[in-house]
Length: 135
Image 1 (cartoon, one colour):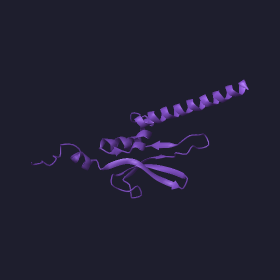
Image 2 (cartoon, helix red, strand yellow):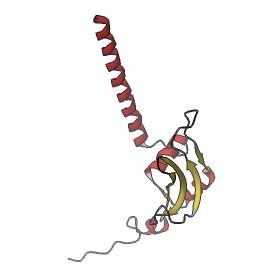
Image 3 (cartoon, one colour):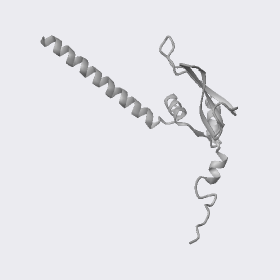
Image 4 (cartoon, rainbow, N blue to C red):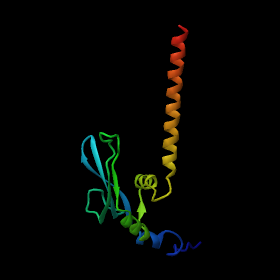
């Protein structure tokens, strides 16, 4: 039985070679104080190796106004997506929240879990209050 090799047009072969770029986070900062650069880099490179281009920043810890600061260069992100660059899931979530991409399904699941947790906490508080009122 002969098995034919995959043709370049059969799937990911040709596209994968051209799109060996990825948009992802590179962690900066120090212990217990992360700060991320959003960069375009080669897919196979380590996060601490030189990058092609930095296209944004993300500070995940809230500041004094309870804000998490994010900055993007949308023009360059669109350019790299047009060149066939892939995206990591955290970067896709952040760009979905910002409005450049559709909202990532994981964002919906996180919001749903947070609502469930809040509802359960509110129920337990109400039960405790009614128990105190009865006594």
